[in-house]
Amino acid sequence: MLEIIDIATPRAYPPRVSAFTRRFWSSLAEGRLETTRCTACQRFSFPPKQLCPHCWHREVAWAPLSGNGRLYAATAIHAAPLAFRAVAPYRVGIVDLDEGIRLACALLENLPLDSPVRLVVLRHPDGPLFAARSVG
Ligand SMILES: [Zn+2]
Image 1: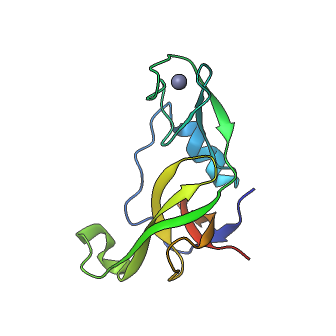
Image 2: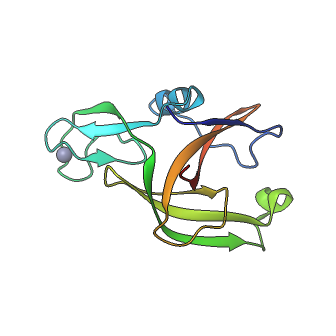
């Protein structure tokens, strides 16, 4: 389970939720990070996909992710796009999860590259987002 942090304001740019990705977002709201995993080659995809982007197999299953990884890249956004102007400046990073997934998300702290990080759930009134913070 990921730590859940309550945020008072709605998401600046809410994600588009499809019938297929609804499960990802409802699990995330409960502190569970999940994605799809190919039933043939066993590789994970992120974001969740209905077919395997590695071997094109058409059968995938939902699988839990640890949320643990390392910080691959990071930056601070000062000149933000209009939707994010109210929350600027903010940090974003690219995280390599232990399961081999590379994803982009908000960073809650200024961390050196290659730091161990853990994903957390940001529980906004209109739905969840995920972000990364330092371990411990
Ligand atoms: Zn595959």
